Length: 86
Image (tube, rainbow, N blue to C red; front, top):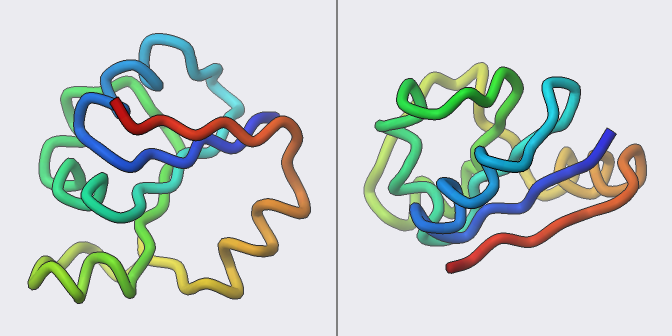
């Protein structure tokens, strides 16, 4: 299983074209703006970094939100880790 770190809406579009069904996606930084449109993308498992969401004045289902400790755990559990920005 891969872990995809998504930093922008364009990154999410590129990621969704390549992510596998058992991969995990985390929206970080400006990628949190894409959380509202996740229904457009065929990504079954995703999370949103709470700190980045809050710092942008956004909100989301709390079940989807993770903190930095959770992000570290995901990084430990997955290989490879792929970053998507543009």
